[in-house]
Image 1 (cartoon, one colour):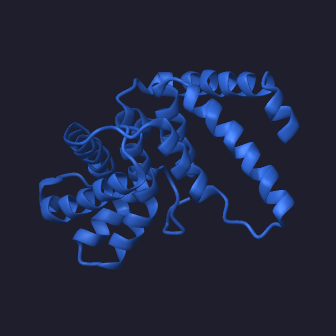
Image 2: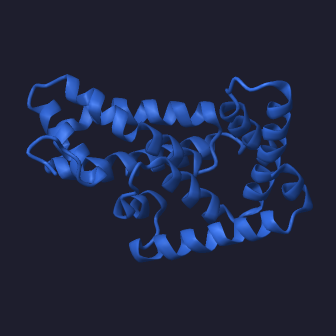
Length: 198
């Protein structure tokens, strides 16, 4: 679609928003932020940062974009620029502080996941399901965790951008994602606690 009912890949949409912003439309920055913040946050989380540190990385990335906007010659490159900047900033933050342990990280994920208005029974069941799910998720390889987090946040995953965010060949994203999901599914299926939960 286009003719400005827009759509297209995430890279195209962010390129159009960035070009509009640099062309004098301040509201276009809000579109850019809305389209990419979750992906940037998960890119930072994929480097081992906790929630608060990932939020700081995303904020630093946006400030850096505003400061360096004129150094980006082609607006279509802005998504790659944002992902690279977020990843580098996350590495820098990670080097300066100790990595959080997996339990604390799972706690962050669970805290954000259960904001539903169910009764106590449903909340207890859902809490158990999530505990089992995130326990198996945390047992996946670091690469699987990074990939699944980032892909899950994109409306329509732009594999080129995901590949750049994670430093993986673009052709390996789909097959790796499939293997990671198959491993998670098999682990859950073989866990009696998951059968009780579901």
